[in-house]
Image 1 (tube, rainbow over the protein chains, first blue to last red):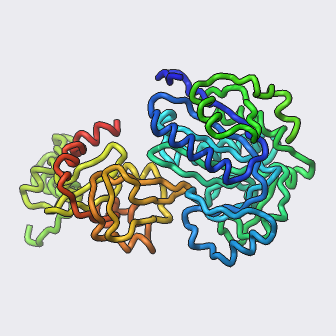
Image 2: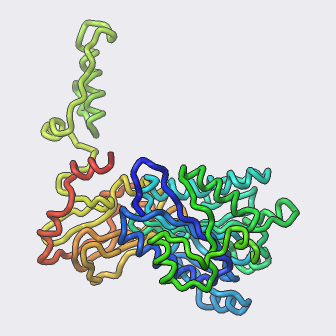
Length: 258
Length: 178
C-alpha cells in the first residue's frame, strides 16, 4: 500500500471489541515496529476498542507505589505500567478507547498539535450531543470540573501509539479508587452521566470516526471488526497487505456484541 | 557621550545608533534614511555581546537533537524547534551515568501535554554526566534548550568521526525546518 503524497491520508480503522489491555499493548508495539520499519510506505492505523477493567499509569510510574498497585489489583482490575504520557487512569467497558498509530509526518504535526487535534475531535463530538466540552491546562477534554476524556500518548520517532479514552457509559465507581490523572479537586464524568440517558460506545463510534476524519483532514476505511480470536501475526500480515479476509464480520454484525 | 554604555544585543546597538544619528543630524526624523540592521558577525567583531547562541560548534540530527563536541566529550540536547513542537515539558527521564549507547538508541524520554516522546542519541558513547537539574525543573529544556537545558554528556567512541560526519550543520538543519 503506497502513500501517495498530495492525497489525504487514509486511516485503516479496526474495531477490536473488548480486549485485555496487555494484549492491545502488544498489538500496538507490533504495529509501531511495523510503521517504523516501513517509514514511507504504510497507511496510518486507528484502533478502536474497549478494555476489561484495568488501571494504567504512564512513564512517571514511580509516583504509584507497589502498595497502591496491590490495592487496585484487589478490586478485580488489572494494573499496567506503560510508556505513555499522563498519570493514572482507568479503562473499562463502556469507554471508547482509540489508539491512532501512525507517523506524524503524514499530517505534518508536532506532538503538541497532535494532542490538541485529538482534543478537538472530542470537543466537536461532544458538541453533537449538545455538551459544551473544553480544554484546560490539564490535557484532556473537560466538562466543567469533570474530565470526560483522558489522553496519554507515546511518540517514538514521530510514530504515535496509545491515545485517548472517552467515557460513554463507563461504570464511574471504578474512578473513585484513584485520583484520576493525578489531578486533585477535579472529577470524572461520562456522556451517560451528563445527559442522564444511556449513551453506548456503539452509537458514539461512527460520530467519532466522522469528527476524526474532519479534524485530521483524512479519509477513513470502513470500520473492520477483529475479534480476539485473531492472532497478532495475522493482524500484522492482514494490515500490511490490506487484504479483506473472509473471516471478518460485516460492519452490521460487528456492533452486535458491544 | 560621557556615560559608558552597556550594550546587550544587536537590537540594543541598533537602537542606540539610531538615537545618536537623530540627535546629531539637523534634519527631521522623517527624512532619515532607514537604519540598517548591523549583522551579527559585524557586531561580534566590534565586541558587542551577542545574545543569540553561537551555533558554529553545534551539529544536528533531522530528529531535532543537537550535539556540541568538546575534545572527546559530546553534550547532547534538543533544539528550540523540538521544544516548541513538544510544549511545556513536565518530566524528563534520563539514563544512568555509565550507560553505553549506540547511535540511534533511545537515550531519554521527555513528557509534555500527556505525551511521552522518545529521544534518539546522535552518536555512540558512554554517558559521563546527566543534567540533574532537569529532574526537579524539566521546564529548563523549554527555556534554554541549547544551553542550560542540555540532557547528557557522552564520551565519544572511535567511530565518532564517521558518525559526526553523518550529522547536519546548522545551515543544513535549518533547511529541514522549512
